[in-house]
Length: 435
Image (cartoon, rainbow, N blue to C red; front, side, top):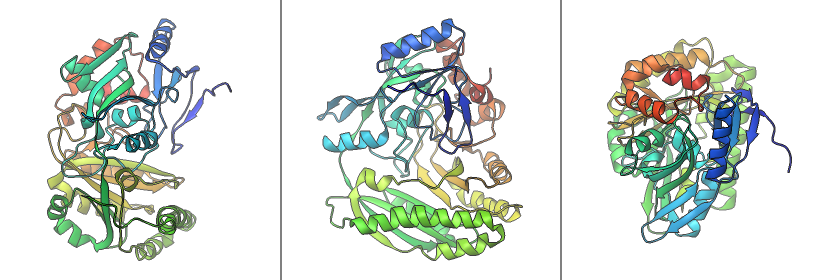
């Protein structure tokens, strides 16, 4: 077996780190041994998944714990639809395994290369009026604390640790197993079509309420959006052909967009014209498919991303302010803005704690300036009570995050208990949670 490299970078390439050592445990006991050994040596420990976070949450100069060997289903209870899965399992593998058992995740984001634990730790979410982030589907967690103890927690057992670890940003333990509440496998009817931005915003409450899952993309410098409405149906009556799948998912969404982005990067003044031309390719598409195939999409165009959850009622104001930010920038924006919706939940560090959210995600192609854009957008969202996605870029610190989360100090108290020596600490953790 090749020796693991100590160098690491995330998917977007904006964060890199060189670890003092790398561990590849395959059991919870081995994870606990790694943590205890590192603590005894005065080193920190950080678990990593697929590296799809845009923050430095997983960066470490201590011991990097790669969870690829800690993967696969542990148990499946078909009658209760409860599934126990190892934390390093990629969502793509989980989706395939669940489908083989006639089950599915109730909702998903659009990236399936994340690990289960990584998706939960950062509050990964999809879109849908009745669905919170993926952590709302968790019934029980097994994790290794900063003292090297293996602990199980749920709403009934160690409930405060459970609340903290559901969206723990990698700071209260290394999750080793997750028990998920799944649903019977289902088919989605996908309806994608262009619509004027003003009409979408004017009728947004009705669109969200009328569909199981609704989202839209807006192309900067235009008045055009692409809306996506996904609803559960009984039969796979309009499957996509292989050519249609390739044409839309590979050619249009990746190859063409990638070429447009490179042209925009090479010739910035042409960006508005290029994006207006690209938006004209938005066209209606209707099909049915297995739920996880509809929810997720390949992402081969590299970009930087910031995403904020804001109170749903603030969407129109936030969007108007975002457009002003874009128009005032000294640089051009090359990629669409994505808008999704989630139900409120009660998880301490969930972006949707206590309220229904609208999520606005902004993007910039790699190699292009983004800081002025992202800081301007962040100022807009912060003023509206926005909460930054834990897996996306932001510039907030503990002092500014505390008032955004009513249970922020409760989270810190749990962290003090399970990781008093800050074995799971790094620069990002100190930024967002303090020393």
